[in-house]
Image: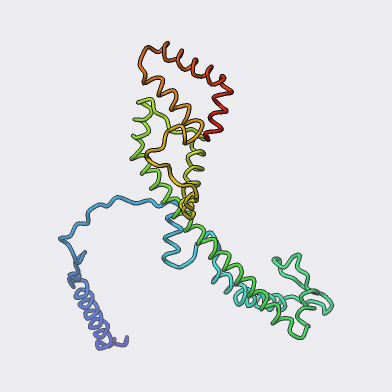
Length: 281
């Protein structure tokens, strides 16, 4: 007689299957989470024009953000690479190469980026009493000089920008008053030439120098009396007095000249008139 199968054994899988099926149906029937797509659904960003920066503005922006010019070197990054990262990377690379490969004791191995370096000189400097310290101090001095040179270059760049701004302002002012030159050209006037300008400049300097001198001392000669005659003041005054006297006598111009000639002949000609003038002077 064939053995009978146990019904309890078959009931357990059916019960588990019903639970799993019901659980699956329950999980599938869960509603999706109600999460908004945006926390500001009513806000619509307005399109903005894209601003393109040139190389100078990019460098200035980088300098304002991190404090250095990207094209003029990274002093802090260079110092970090030279002092820490490079040395540790070299040690790690050498350790990795010595593990899988066997090097003889009398052989010096170098890395690809060490080609051309003089290790004997470096070993000599390192074996000095304070060779490494001296080398590091020298490197620090060079870094300081480089930093100062960059600072001077930066200040020169700022000074050039200030000069360019002043030059632009001067050009604008020149353009504002340029109509004066056009008016002068239209009217036919012209400024003084170079030589005349030098004469004016020299006369101005002479006037400024003479204004600082002491006033002249009064002359020892006594001033002329009001009742003194004109010919008593000198030769030229005498001749002027004689001409005026003849001219005041009346008559035409020819008669006046004839009278002057007669007086000169009576006085002995021009030499006699000069002698009288010298005696009177």
